[in-house]
Image: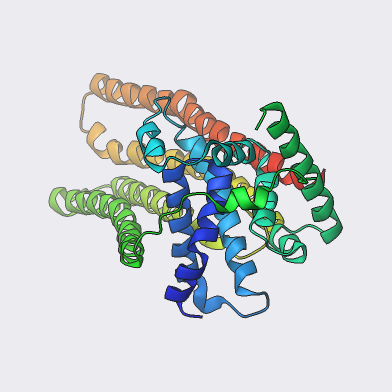
Amino acid sequence: MEFENIYKTYWERIFRLCMGFVNDRDLAQDLAQETFIIVWQKLHTFRNESGIGTWIFRIASNNCLRQIEKEKRFPKAELPSHITEEQHYSVEPQIQFLYQCIAGLPEMDRIIISLELEEVKQTEIAKIVGLSEANVRVKIHRIKEKLTQKFKENGQ
Amino acid sequence: MDNNIDFKDLWKKQAISQPDIEDLLERVKQFKKAGVRSIWKTNILLAATSAFMIFVWYYYQPQFISTKIGIILGILAMVIYVGFYNRLLGIYKDSDATRDNHEYLQQLILIRKKQQFIQSAILSWYFVLLMTGICLYMYEYASRMTVLYALLTYGITLLWIGFNWFYLRPKQIQKQKEKIDSLISKFEEVNEQLKS
């Protein structure tokens, strides 16, 4: 698959995954771009052992995990400098709340639920995160329960 | 469980803007340039210092073998330091971003532990070599001074070395250790999430 095609096909999905992880539009954009830079660098090593989707989602989720390092190095500024930006996009409150809830989960749960909502098959999710399928199923169930709970508490 | 809330539907409604592919390719270019630049910076520093030392050797024509050994040790200290520094910059090349999250996290933990070891070991070696080099280098010039001045010169130098060794070095190592330890424990915590 050509890089340009991959970029067009997967950008939205990767962006949402990153957004679920950090819930910050600018940061998610950066993370998604970094993901595609790695894809661009590594594409020649892709051997079709897994689907290209699984391969790309692995890179993206690993890159999100590496974000933890950057957070430690440059703690987020206290000033809400991106507030105007948020307003510009005027996302529905319910959507905002969903992303906010997901970004508040433990790191691995964020990745797992984002992949699930992205309609990645559970067998594939298992291959991306490195868990058994049964484990993934249990986790997804628990995370959805947690999210439903939060939505109810919030009266959404 | 999402019988009344359609999370998937909400999830997909997130507003998205896709940057032009040209932007991305531009970033790839910058990314490459930045990599080359950082290697240049440290290596130019090394080259300049070494050139200065070689100039001293050539221009002042030191008579004593100790002076020459001192110069060599000084250069060696910097070569080792910069060499490992370059390796540390490239340490992430060892990590394979196409593995699954579980393996990747374990890799990150391992890399960080390796980094911690290299940093503290190399920092100590750097100090030992550089300080020995300086003491040897000074000997020729001190031997031409009166005893009082020679003692004073060595006294001050040793004091400075002691300050570096007993104060700055442990402090630097501690600072690096804290930073890396907090990263390792965070990665371990995330890794644990996979087990629960």
